Image 1 (cartoon, rainbow, N blue to C red):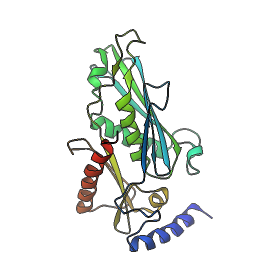
Image 2 (cartoon, rainbow, N blue to C red; image 1 turned 180 degrees about the vertical axis):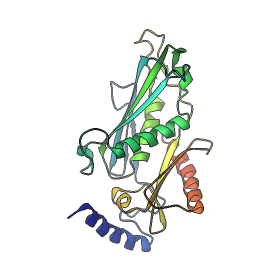
Image 3 (cartoon, helix red, strand yellow; image 1 turned 90 degrees about the vertical axis):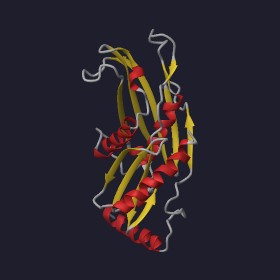
Image 4 (cartoon, helix red, strand yellow; image 1 turned 180 degrees about the horizontal axis):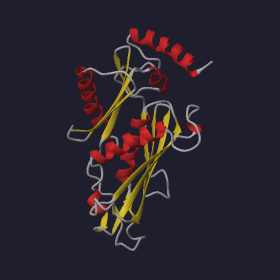
Length: 256
């Protein structure tokens, strides 16, 4: 049975439930799945976290090495974000070079933490124009059941909060905490049959008409948005998702 046929069957099932205001796992439309956060999960990393959101499980590691800044930003460190989606995590992932999905996950996560100024990158500069800390943020998916954006975003913020800059090991003075400025938290919603659902499962993602990811910081200010899939949101629906992102983002931030 092909994937499209499976998706059609699941769409019919999900649509019938939504018509009654219900979801397959019994959640409210604006309710997240159970969330657990573990920090210092990888001993060899400068910061790390494992996040479980429902059946989706993500590990994030933060690594810092010395290197040269980009010529156009000589006074700031360098941020590089990668996402690894391997077949072990889901039969929908394929082995080989990063595909479009893994590139999109990395870009959405990167945009949230970069535009939300999660880290004061100026404090990762050692000598302007010559030497800075290069920060690698690596996202590894262990189990996939939807909403990688939010699971990975939460794991990145948790890893940042406990990360240490290894200055002593590099002969650059004493170690110091990663200079965290903000905690930009993303919330993802999908639209199915005109209804807005938060924290979609994989089945819900497969039949969704449109997807919107909104990242906010502590003040409630927006720092990033990403629209996905072919469908559209009305202005009222976008405002609704933004409001939910602010409210739930604050709840998640209190758990970090």
